[in-house]
Length: 313
Image (cartoon, rainbow, N blue to C red):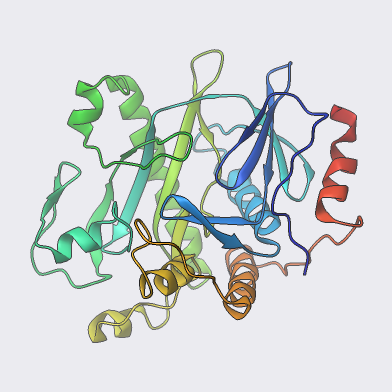
């Protein structure tokens, strides 16, 4: 299997390295975003997963094309399976996380907080008596600060967002409306394929005209949590973790062995890496209903990307 650990292309201008993506800003206002195979969690890179960047780009494409009637998105073209060319946006400093279930393992997730006895979080009060991975009475928005340059996201409430001037009241109303509608569409379509869209994050930005545009990715296994619908009720009743398609698989492996926010991450075995790659491919097929056939053209993934982006040099 082939890997794309990074995609540094000196011929492209204005390089910025994100956690898992390489970004280049063209003079005409377009942004080139290349998805690598880096896997990020706990605010750090854990490992590299073969074909991950290609799979995520194509899953996001599937969803962008099926939600364009709900809100505008940044996509202009797909010159390569790992690449999207989009409109350059000024990213809003708030990440919009929508949750439909009491789940999660990270410090910003609601399940660990609920287990500690917290009932009010993100400005929302949850009822007593919920079990691990239970369905919430209704989807909720749990926003976090948008940490740039590898920083740590922090929980926010609507009141804090407005008081700190992170978003205007109009912007908050718009992104909240978009996010809940996108999540409803995602849950509806996932259910038809035997999946549960548990929670997801959305990033929004503004274009030159000040319009709010959906950015980054949408409803991928990296930005979302999916469970297999069959067996979910039994798992909740027995206190087991529902079968999933997301990177909680590796998260759980790491958490069982260290404190990922403080300790050095142990080397993740090749068998776990390969299994995770298979999980991403299975997720692509379950979500889209299409077989995943990797693009093996070019001597390496980077060689193929360079050839496909050569017209932009």
